[in-house]
Length: 372
Image (cartoon, rainbow, N blue to C red; front, side, top):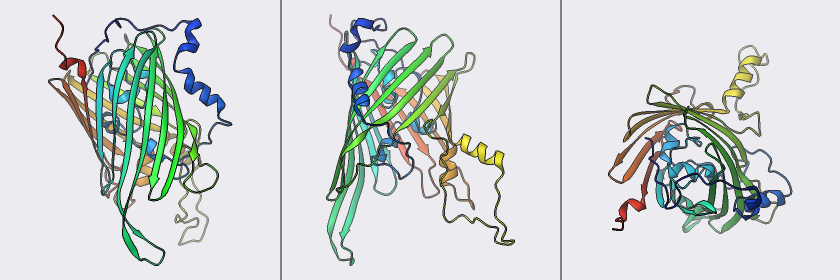
């Protein structure tokens, strides 16, 4: 559902950045950190990086529309957690809470609060968590001795600012912490993003560089593991005469081949013994489509929305050939009641189950009586 603008006091127009003020703005803190890192992280996917919980989608709206991020500039604070260039005066004093009922007793979520400071831009503080649940502690012989917990956390400070009526920039600084039984790790990461929005045509485009950083402390004495670095591009378009918005995301621009080589896949035909040859065009099309996430949002009224998404890579990696089902698809809805926006989503990850996403957002300023 569309989110209505709520300007902060004294913030009636987008703030503009002057060239001589550049070094006074918080964006350049993460940019300097980016330059100080010895090398840009190598592309990492599935199981090849640490702090992988950073790739889990918290927002129900994002989860319903494919499960990655969204380039939609309509004052939804839950989207700005992932795309800080959407942090603006219009979400001043907004609170967002999100919870995901994952598999078994695993759950995760976030809480965020945004505030605009005149002359310096808009800020958002957020805490993300992943609770792995309880585990039975045992030694190599199978002898048990109680239970232990495991969790991962990110404390995040985001900043965003409009350059003019069409362009905005933003960045996140994230402190990372992971505790798995007696093994502890920490890290530092930054996101740098930019968004273009054409309000007349309803077109929005965002570019993200996510999780630029490194592990500070490792679980065991060794070389630091890489973070789940990613470059991504997103576009959304609101149709002029139909209350429909579509979203197209291009993920992992830093890496072409996202396929997983399953060692269990046969390399030869079991009947003829001949090597299995793959069609070149089909291989190319499969690798190309793994980068795309598609979503759509129908808003028949300003207080209600229906959403649908499709994640091709998730479907290919998680499907079971004997029963394809709806793996890779997601759906959800959102509605407004009084001062609250409620969003729900369900995403088919695997036949074993589908996570449920719940997000609640509100403008705390609505609860403050205006001065007379």
